[in-house]
Length: 343
Image (cartoon, rainbow, N blue to C red):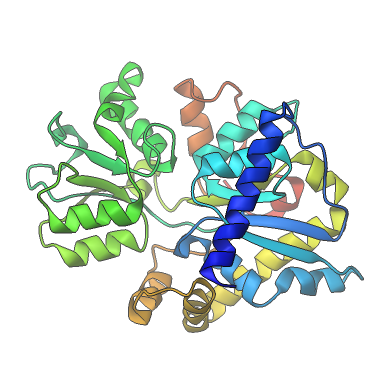
């Protein structure tokens, strides 16, 4: 599919979602019949599992094993806000984003659309980087610094930073660094960090961008990792959907979950082929050596098993970001994931 066609499809999805929402339809009024599924992923190597699923047509494969021909629609959209609007409008069946945005949807839709997570997409750290030699820890950040994040105040990076800020400065001051945070896409923030001379001197970065920044400027250094904040390896992104889609499409859902599991096993078994898959499916211009380095990095695990997601659920509830208190990670994941040794 050409870049133009992918863009056209993304615009069509967003237009449909916006039209439905502006028309006053807050719930998904139509659901795909069994045998159809529309999926949206964001950009980057963190979505490698979905690239493998798409490349090997694993949903179709698992559907045929049940005697079902499944038509799969793939979309790429940047940002959790657009994802969530399209999901609630019924324009998409399954969307993807970081753990905090998913939890926000779970929290806000309880007793209504009942949005829950399908599966994790992997445990990958995010690094808070700075090219300011004076910034060694979070306590060194001042009003003169500017932190680039994809979605200031509400995204994965900001929520992770808020959890650590509350520990350092107290619950009442958990938004301390929101005032010096700037919404900026990862590529632009990486360029600013490497080139220097910009007001952006700090960036909460995901792969592959922190690899590039650390290699591109000797002054760029890691201040803290999301793994440091969460207590170890933790899920970065997840897939999620509505109760309505889950319950109305049991065979399609089963095929989807089976496809995700098989893709994760494929990546673990053959990282070189997985790297080739990412480059081919995403038409990536990243150096093959860098892609392989990222996939082979022991910090990165492409798994459907949720890890330390409950840290977010518990801490964000304490901060008042989430109104509902989860008893465990199983409260916001559908049953099919419960057999995993999650957390």
